Length: 152
Image (tube, rainbow, N blue to C red):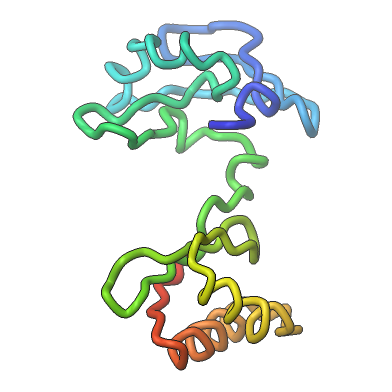
């Protein structure tokens, strides 16, 4: 959403749903194919016209305000395949989302207690084993009253 035009540029429309694209960061080209189930959404360019920096294949999910889909998910380039948006959501004792982990291990939160707990207990963890790290994060945050949902 915020870096789409910096990553992908459509060079040529090949068919009604196939495009030759350039990977701007890593170089090279790839063939993108808009998935059949997303064709109607892809044809609606109104929101993309208002946001020219968005990925040219990102569209609003029909009937779901504020939710978006990658219309070329199955043929997306490697740079998109390796990008991780959210790896973990953290909930407070009342079940409200208190924060999330974006990228590899970056906490995004407005909860001062969670930020402190993260800085003191999670940030110092020195393991590269993702499974062990997520397990330890869940234990640390759990002791402070938070619940963690981890994603692959």
